[in-house]
Image (cartoon, rainbow, N blue to C red; front, top):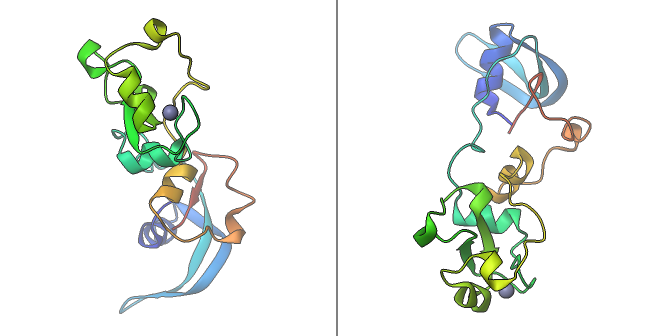
Length: 158
Ligand SMILES: [Zn+2]
């Protein structure tokens, strides 16, 4: 998803074309163009994503559905799977949502030492999840056809 302003620049520089129109118009002193809802990039243009950034608390909770990955209770803490004291990093593949009791029991032990398992491999969230946990409104229904694919050739607007 990209901001409307950025989409407008892509449209004006002919790097993208409107696939699905949105509501309203973008105005400046010299221009008056319809707001697009979905644009298609005519060639690959890098779109900055937050996925590569280091995980935020909210991000981890949102990705793990606000549930403890170990016992499925409501999560209120962030656990480093490989404890930081043991060289674990603060990266998406090493942070999970955990409830306070599990986090306390886990302390600075590894999963192998405890005999615990992760229900799934922690991964960076998709752009779709990131959008959700920025607390924004529901996505425009016109995006639905486009959302399952990510990509290089399509840009979505926020
Ligand atoms: Zn737990």
